[in-house]
Length: 248
Length: 341
Image (cartoon, rainbow over the protein chains, first blue to last red):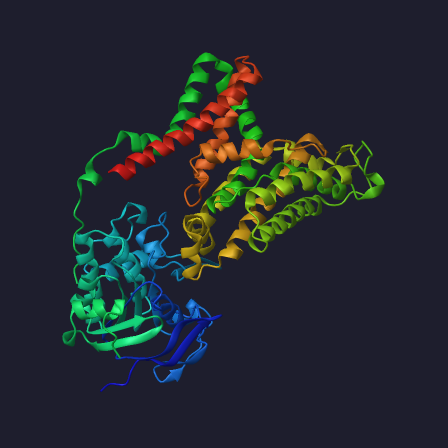
């Protein structure tokens, strides 16, 4: 078995008396796609925010490539190869696709002592990223005018900029049409093809069972299931999420 | 890998007249206005009159450039008129060499400070005022409307305190040249206005700071998540607005050969009107310096033309008010159509 890229070792997160996450162990293998499921309040968001560096664990360790880590913020996590696609995608509607992909990481060029934005380099790079993702999104399109699927492509292209090894996707299919869901699942497959480890947080059973290799279910802050998708079924997953099946 | 050819959609090829009209409404209207005034009143097109319009526009236009940065971040700066008055008084005080000659009506001879020092003092006061307000917005989390409404009152009060109620007048000619002089036939403030507009345009369009101003106005949370230093950017736009208040204060003092505490009363409304007529959204993230220049020119041409036609200044105010609302209504209508497509 390959060494895990990211590990949770007995991680707990408490907010006062509330145990948002209780003694969770998890090991992610490079290149796999894990579907993380659970009802509202089960601890999914807490887990995302721990990995993204927004929160620190109360107990236990998060280990990245064998090193225990403590991120100060999400930029810190980003420099270590972890990217997050937020539920609302964190896009600026008024800017172009290329502007959004490079937001905060703009390519600059020099004219004498002055550093200016290198629009051409950013457009070229963004076009290549969209081509890799097989998306029709054009770098110069303004995000406001885009479909849900195209917006996802912009947010996902952003994660490819620094060649992130781990991409967290928070409910990417929650608010888009059926046709666009297919588009987003394709995008996730492209990430997988490129060897990226994907954590897919979703309420939607069909999405997880279509693209994930492994199913992890949280209930009330505890991990109640962690098994290959092939060994599970949507019915079992539903039972685990609601507590009808008690699990591990 | 060959890039897939973009498939032109129906949207790209269909010409939407309303969209084009909305996009170029302000420049088209400016053009129409010039044409109408030229027909009704031949004196309007005289080069000296046109340069006069430009000179009148240049002071409020400079402040409008700074205001554009602020409004692009979805902020507002109501303090510009008061800050301009305060900066102008400090500028005049320094120009006259300090307390001794403060209220002397003739040009001070021996004690006068160099012009650059007076201009620098005006700009420093403006930027300091902007910095205080920017920090109040970002650190104390007070909405910009409230912070700068406080600034509007407080800076005016400081200006009155500083001046003791009277004007500071009578400068050296090398000082007044900046407001009254010409290079060729073009008034100096006009040259400064256009140079500032071009610089501001380049900053907004071609620097990282400019891109981040748009990002903060578009979605501040998203910008922050992507590493944009949103607090620094937001503070920065108020400092820029203050810079332009200071610069405008210096030019106004030079033009009038005087600075007084009531200078710039109501300026904030003219300036915000120019920015909004120029197509900048009060919700942030959308707008250009070009639009602001057109908006400022439009108000200047309208005022000048109506004066030449002997139309009452009361009616001018009504007309400007109607145009302001019409400009935003047209934008909203066009946005609605875009969303419907």
